[in-house]
Amino acid sequence: MINIFEVAETNEMIEKENLDVRTITLGISLLDCIDADLKMVNEKIYQKIYEAAKDLVATGDYISDEYGIPIVNKRISVTPIALVGGAACKAPEDFVSIAQTLDKVAHEVGVNFIGGYSALVSKGMTKADEMLIRSIPKALAATERVCSSVNVGSTKTGINMDAVKLMGEVILQTAEATKTEDSLGCAKLVVFCNAPDDNPFMAGAFHGVTEADKVINVGVSGPGVVKTALEKVRGENFEVLCETIKKTAFKVTRVGQLVAKEASKCLNVPFGIVDLSLAPTPAIGDSVADILCEIGLEQVGAPGTTAALALLNDQVKKGGVMASSYVGGLSGAFIPVSEDQGMIDAVTAGALTLEKLEAMTCVCSVGLDMIAIPGDTKATTISGIIADEMAIGMINQKTTAVRLIPVIGKGIGETVEFGGLLGYAPIMPVNSYACDAFVNRGGRIPAPIHSFKN
Image (tube, rainbow, N blue to C red):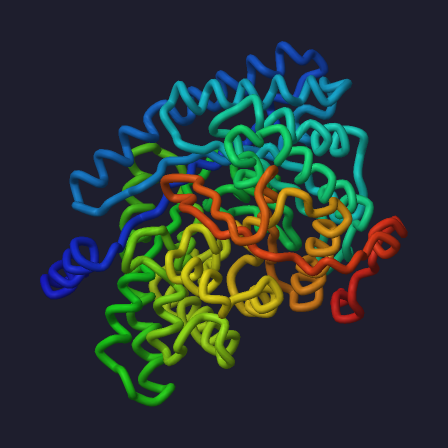
């Protein structure tokens, strides 16, 4: 039972510390929409999603009003479209038509994003996988709410360097295709290693093939809550610090569990997981960087940053697991540059570089996230950055991801505005030395020795 003290405490978190349920994401399997006829595929996809999600937004609004908990986004994730469209699509343009169907139904049901325009190619690419990947620039330019992801590596299979090379090219093409919007399409495109099947957060969400026909996943976020809790234990030792983070994460996860259970009941859809991720926003007081500074750093990027982030990530997971039997997705601390005012300030001050961010991704929830780079960055350089990040995920048996935004027409020192939750970002410098010969080798980087556990 939740007692009256916890109710008052939760209200305080919501009103003063930016606690929110970042997203209710309805996962929908589209495997039964597979057909050899493209028109039929599009019709089946539209009907399946519409019927499943027509009450999603209204349900989220009802729960928000009933419990006084802000639910910022209502979203949909679907089976990777490379699998769904493989039998019907004969050219990249055919896949674009499916993206437009996804966008249309997302508008109809009122969700802000729909994820799953995806391909899983960690060991190799089918013709359908490659066609979908090559269609991504046009698909993201032709849609508003569609998000795309490509999983190019895993601890079990290694890294598909052919896919890594292709994704460097596709990211640049997507930037070019959406250059009138400051290359915004790249903000909706993620490259993964070890992508989870149940991630509710965009842009990387898709509904894995191991999942049920429909499922409710909830993502909770509370950087401001953690920051406020740590202000009360300034100067205390690490044991006190860790206990404070754990207890706070427990309370935040309880809120997510409540919302998830209620949404599951209202929609008559099974509850999947609660993802407790400290996902920041550009709002003042809603920053992971501020938590790291409260732990004891003058600025993010200072010596000790990686250790502080490792501590934070681990304690968040420990607290969340105690609050719900089904904690999943990514769960931990996100470090997106454009979406976190503290990160933006650290980059602007020169304290935080791309290389330091890469080191931090060894211990955070995801990876190099929402980082704006010069628009004239070479495709092979982008592929090299992806390969580095995938290697961190592969070796450390964790999810890593890359969401880079080469902003066409802009260079180091300039700023790009994305608006809303996506925020704004200074253009960061990229190492100018080439890695062309490495990227162009082709083939696959083998799985590490510790992956053989059968």
